[in-house]
Length: 154
Image (cartoon, rainbow, N blue to C red):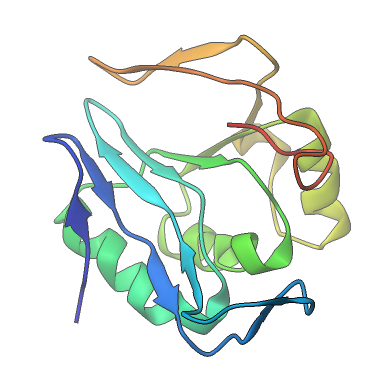
């Protein structure tokens, strides 16, 4: 059963809440679990911003499918590849094999090191200050290295 939230007319939260975790990074107490904050932008092109841990993968995929409502997924923007945030990437690639990936050069290296089956032809690397237009929305990319990991961007 899908559970997405409309943020604006074109943007939807498709993430999921994981209440099974008691600790963040195995150190910090989590009294209410964690939220995986992934979003779908519906424009001339459809865009998924980030994925989620596979522990909530079924809910996550159902949310995306419900929001897309039969439309293809055109782009996946990967802001962070730490496994708890990126574990659903492979499932996205299986369900939407024509999706184009937008991410930082460092993230590309990490994705390959983690063994994700990514074809170089489907990856668009972005750097600080780059922009991408998806229709009426233009997204600017900002590097955020070491906010958490070296490849992080927003």
